[in-house]
Every structure is written in structure tokens, then in C-alpha cells.
Length: 180
Image 1: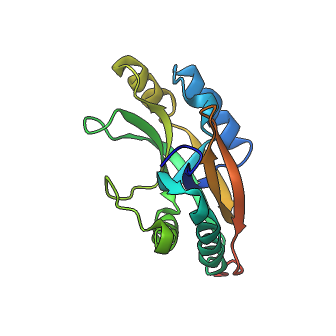
Image 2: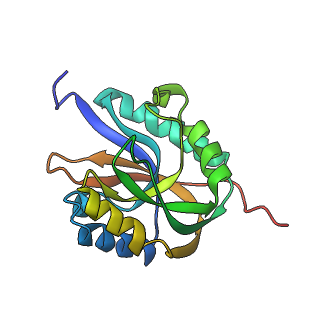
């Protein structure tokens, strides 16, 4: 298939302001050339090539998955890394891991039942494919990073011809927040 017949999409939880833009600036400060092209997020479905005619089915599927979800809280705290397997430094989730895992299982069905390269581990990438000293700096400088925010939706992103990821559609959760 040609580029006109396919699109590269991804599904993710967007990191809201002020945290998303702040972490995107930090990612750029570590020398990551992709920082300006990738909004700060927690991946649910990684970059995936799909035929253009499948997009309507994918959006219907994502609407249905979102209807079954309730808002939850994310607490980002500290850093982690996938080295030596993958040259990635990330901000870790201290709260919301199980919610993201459930959400990921819900969206990775039907038209998005794509095989994983690695087990699912929700995180926020802040440095990727950089020299070891830049990865070390990201790991150290964000070690005490902390942010808390509610999650009420996820988004379908599309990779543009210019290399920039943009939200194509947002999918708000259909259920109310659980009260304790």
C-alpha cells in the first residue's frame, strides 16, 4: 500500500498542561530531536500503520472502549529507564498503572489488536535514542519530578507527512468517576 492508502496512528493518554508542555521542553533540553514532534503522552497503542478505510472502524471501536471507562488519576513520580534493552528514559507512574493497563487492554482489541514488541509498561518518555550522557542527565534531572492530574479521555493521534504527531480525535470516558 502507498502512503495515500495508509496512515500511521497511535492511541495515547495526553499529559495535560502545564505538565505536558513542561516535559516536552525538558525532553528538548536533553537534545531529543523528536521532542517538538511528539506531544507528551502515555502510549496505549504504539505507532501502527492502518489502511485509510479502516479509520472509521477504529474510531467506532475507540468510542465504544471509552464509553466503558471511568475517569482516574495519574501520579507521575521519578524516573526509570529501559536500558540496556532500549535507550529510553521515562517519568514513571506512581498511581494509575492498573487503570492504564485496563485501558490499554480495552483499546487493543478488534481493529487495534496489534502484537506488542514488549510487555505493556505505562510511562512518559522524556529521552529516546540519545547518547548515554544525555540519557543519564535526563534520568538524574527528573528523578524528583512529580505531577498529579485526572484522566478523563484518551486520543487517537495521526503521524503527519511532516513527522509531527497530532490528535485526530479525543474519546471522553462514558462513566462517572468512582467515589470511595
